[in-house]
Amino acid sequence: MPLSFRAMPRGFSNVIILALTSTFAFSTTAMLMLVGSLVGLALAPSPDWATLPIAIMVVGTALGVVPVTRLMSRLGRKYTLWIFCIVNIFICLLASYSLSIKSFALFCFCAAMIGFGNAALQQIRFAAMENVAPKHAVTAASIVMLSGVLAAIIGPELAVLGRTLTEVEYQGSFWLVAGNILIACFILIFYKDLKVKKSTGTASSRSIKLIIQSPSFRLAVASAAIGYIVMSFVMTGTPISMHNHFAHSLSDTKWVIQSHVAAMFLPSLITPWLFRLFGIRGLMTIGLACYGLMIIIGLIDSSVMGFWFQLVILGIGWNFLFISGTTLLPRTYLKGEQFKAQAFNDSIVFSTQAIASLSAGWAISSTSWQVMLLVCLIPIGFMLITLLRSNPIPNA
Image (cartoon, rainbow, N blue to C red; front, side, top):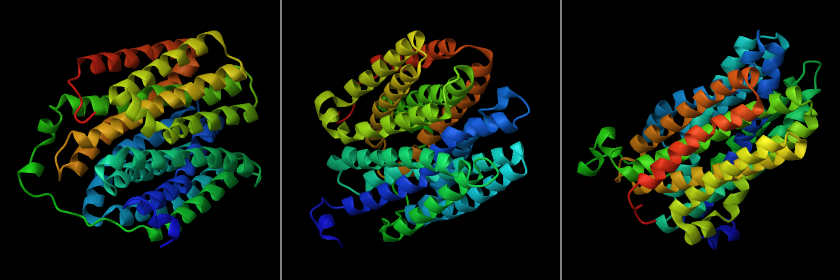
């Protein structure tokens, strides 16, 4: 094993391998975030359906959570990730074909399948935390999330690079990200999977109804879900709002989306330190404050820089809320309940994100950008109430 790995705490070599896998595999999602609604606008029968590909990708993720976690409990993380990465390579090629025949239905199907594969990739953060000692869990999760910075850069760059690679706009983009997923499959060869332990004993016999009775469990789910609802609602509507409504260039729109996705993950460089300084409650509060500031900026500035500041602050707020929920979650269930609890958490998170993404398409075509931002006050208020009513957080 490389010398640099030896100096790391136990399990961190696996964490780095998972982070690199995530970097290349998630570039597909970052690419689709940029081109999904633009392709949708060109192929959809109505502008109201332009954001459907992005929304249906999230729906695919929500639908994939339960089967993915069940498969992982039987085959392990490594082989399940391999299966879905290989499937997504072929789905990217099918998506490129859908563009050549101008089939909106087939493109949406491909987006849904990419989302289904994302359900497996989302489990990487839990796998990373399971590979290290509990005291290093925040650091492990932060390293995996930090890999999203590179994905945020690579994905949109491949989208623009592949846009004119063939006569069919964006067809080459899907060819390029398929190659990226292939790289992820190769990196995953070096991952040493943990032994799959079957759930036994009273500790693992609780039903999900009993697990969700924990106020801390509900807070963890709410933090991740609300973080995703607001982020997805605003982010999904941004390309159309910037490029079509406010006439900003595709290059500027790409830059804003890249900056946003980078801002979602770049704070992970200092997240472990912030956890020690503010704790989970404090970081959740700061995340909500970021969302509030994002709304204020959006109400007064629709320039390129205005959008840039909105989307960067949106990404930072998401990072704090999502990683707070992710870190809190393992503290709220017993040994042997991880797949059950994680499946419930991700089902809620990505189901509500899907609703937000679907709503964004209607909202951006029926209302103004400012009204969309004001709607975000509803989930923000709900999260604030949940945080204020929650009991002391275990080990926070």
